[in-house]
Length: 86
Image (cartoon, rainbow, N blue to C red; front, side):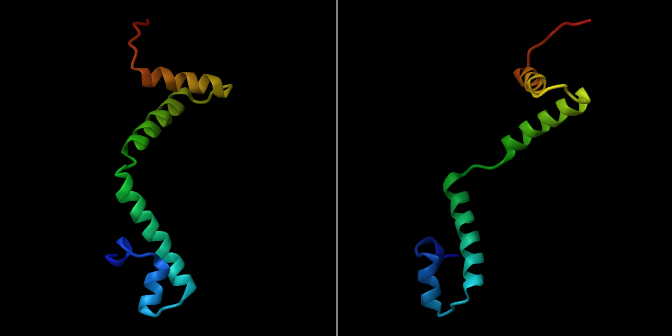
């Protein structure tokens, strides 16, 4: 992984003398994912939280007649408005 920070995968394969295409394709995939993770510094915690809210709205509603009502319910839940309904 140390070499992957300064060299491309093709350069590393030439350096070590290994030319197995499938192996390097797999390594390249994971190296690119690791680089993107390091560069972006973003995790999916926020997305998981939003998904949890959406799934809760979906469960409580027991189905919607159309997608517009579903989206509206999600917006209402995420807005944190307080309603004093009977």
